[in-house]
Length: 297
Ligand code: NAD
Image (cartoon, rainbow, N blue to C red; front, top):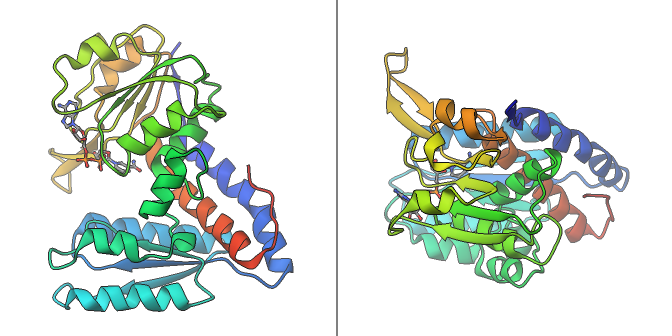
């Protein structure tokens, strides 16, 4: 029987587990604060940011939202980041990507104070993660590690294939999987758009993590019997629905489910975990900035 990994349920467990830490901070007079910054009129980005704000409210994190005019000069965004860096009530800063064209994305990533960079994208934090001394693990790969842990998937010695090499998912995922650390120690292959024979790699894998942004790229014929399949993809494809589209993953779910031992659905797999780990990183940031020790595992 294939086990469907319920990301909503695991994310709820993570959120519940943050309660104790948030209470400890509260007893010391600290309310963790997360600032989200939006400078885009992409409807998906607007939805993501409002979901993140709602999550904050639910767990007792103070959500602060800053929305900038999409026609404003880039300097307004850089100044906003400086202000948030200096604000002691703000422990975490998330600039929703992608930002408008006039903004230099690399400058944004460099500008967020590393200790408030709850996305884990600042070069200092990327370096620390690669060196095995992560301050903040990027939310999506961190959430996937938690999903694997909660589902009892052994990474040590496993053959893992990561499909995709982006800075936000593929690269950090592969990095975490090769760390000599719990939830690492996997023999890891990274496939990408220039990989010659994707199926030859995925067929050997005990764990496949698909993050290519290509609808239903990986199907059942490309998988080993019993493999764990983590589908990161969120792709809009035209469909005869009220909205005119539906969301599909990077995995062809029906055929993959016939072969996989464990599989995540889309939606309800990786997405809720990404959001939960943002809260987790924000609580960690608040603890480290205030020196109030909390229990986070
Ligand atoms: P990206 O476009 O930045 O990177 C995609 C990667 O896939 C590239 O490195 C590319 O080399 C590789 N790729 C493209 N076509 C390929 C092919 N045919 N074979 C093998 N590799 C191929 O995307 P991203 O930001 O990493 O996101 C990937 C997907 O995950 C998207 O659908 C995105 O919406 C989704 N996503 C979901 C979450 C979540 O929380 N659920 C978070 C981030 C991204």
